[in-house]
Amino acid sequence: MVVPYVLARSKELVTDPIRFVYSRAVYELVYALVGRRSDVAMGVLRARVKTSARGEVMWRLVNSIRQWRCMTKKLCQVCGETAGREGDGIPWILTQSAFQTMSYLPPDCGDTNSPPTCRACWPEALKRCPELKSHARVVTVREVEPVAVLGDVYRPSSGPHWRTPELVQEQAYVPLDEFARLPMVLATQLVLLLHGIRNVEPPRFDIRSAAARGRTAGSRKPG
Ligand SMILES: [Zn+2]
Image 1 (tube, rainbow, N blue to C red):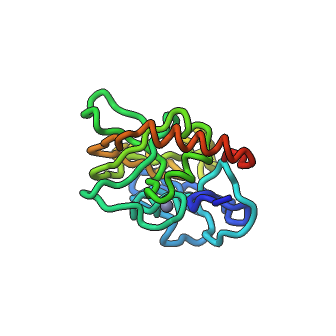
Image 2 (tube, rainbow, N blue to C red):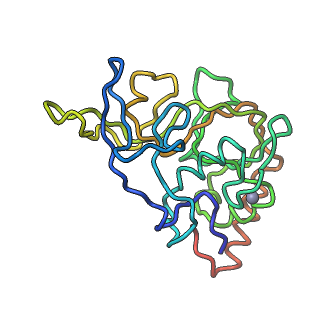
């Protein structure tokens, strides 16, 4: 079975402690151990992970650094190769759980925390996941724009232990222009706003045929 590039492995997980610092009238999360350049991405503290690809596959967890890399470099979440270029139409599979439209934006826009999937990997991706078989849209995207992160939001503990973070909300959606909340987030995933989304015709045909192949194969367990 193909292991998607974006997924985390058990030996990549890192649990380095975080704490608050107070600087220029702002409480800000930092790593208690020496900071690294990769700790901060787009002005937000990002969850530390290794990228060794060692250990058991964590089927329900993405590797934050690889997710970020896929989103910013338009890499395929399955094979890790370039999925496409802006302007040419970046291939994407949009699922109900990882894609949302906004009423104030044109209907061909929406945001997602799920990276692109190159056309060569569409059959594998559609076959692997039950949600993709029934609820996915296969599309191309004209251009993308970072708009938010998903992450855990903290606040300083009360009293003399204010440096110790107190968890407020897990996996919150925090827009990149929420400047008051961003210093309190430990981000795990980047969210992109997709512009110029176009269904690939015939979109349902691909999904049904992939589902049929999956049923015929029988032995493959869904991811
Ligand atoms: Zn691919």
